[in-house]
Length: 359
Image (cartoon, rainbow, N blue to C red; front, side, top):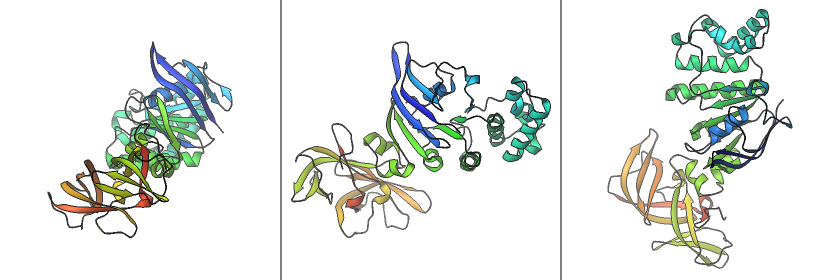
């Protein structure tokens, strides 16, 4: 049973600040992903929780106990690293049981814990092998097993799947999430891969330049991005953005852009002529005319990327580069002219100056 509460956490390297007052509350048993571009501070935050980085100011609490000054070995937290960090001269069993050996546990206790964990991870046939004789996925399981045998209160994962191929990454993220649910241990997972964050998490923390931009469930962050950064970072391909000015007509608002008018289907409580940015996800754009359409935008096709069942179509409209995720059966040709349609309820509106969501 473990809760993690972080309050006004700051980290400076000399005079350079890298984390700017992080506030984050993690409930017992939650799987929380820290996601953001390289250099945003997510791994630094994870290492501070683990005790591998010092705290400049603020507090980290584990079960309401401040752990800022505790050494890593006294925090009851286990970390799985990107590079596995296995001892090459030790067998799988010795690697998995090493932390218990340091605690001076009995050989019987170590053997029992290692064998039970190996059975859980499908590693029993490999206990006598050395890391060099294992595949990448097997090495990752050993690294996880080494963490599990300690029975920690919190698991920390620092981009553990980045060295694996695409197919194995999908398999391993399923295994990690299934295992975490079975054990019920609180987990904090760092990744730059938004697909991992979306599919594995109870809660996503989107970070940018040492600050938290949004915290929410995966569907909430995707459907209701708090600002332009989250809107463009979460989702692949990224959300389409069209700049314009706000207009009102009775109880409804519109956005005027490059000679086109986009109906919002609702009233936006901002003065007329406010500079705004309208966003729409590529999968919400269609070639077919839809009832209650927000827009009918001329679109020049520049590039078609088949992805299997669908294709990503890139082009320009209203002075912006747009992308539509369409059926590969739609009639399209490079250099062709089509019309894009979208529904009012699928539009997002942001203030251009602040970048914040305003609807």
